[in-house]
Image (cartoon, rainbow, N blue to C red; front, side, top):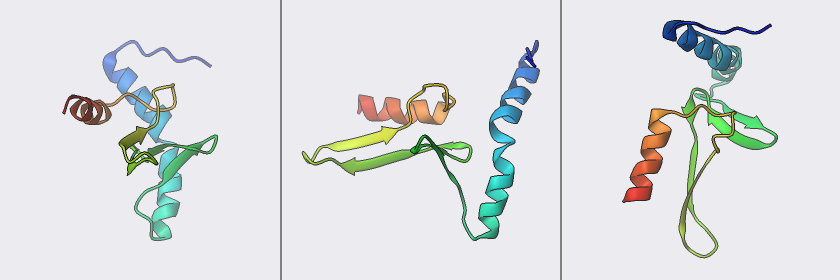
Length: 92
């Protein structure tokens, strides 16, 4: 089945339903076990934390600072916060 939302409100609701609705049950189970959030793995790669972007910051073997986040390859939605963090870090 293919759904083609015609209005922006329908599209937004569709994205929320498609991307976030399936996570509610998993997050509820995690909260019952005392966790605050869930790391989402796809092919053993961390993509997101619930409805939030995920970043790793560390010093690599050469001592350089690195920030790693999931690529925009269709699994992660491009978000304002993700973009803002990357822009600030790349321009400072």
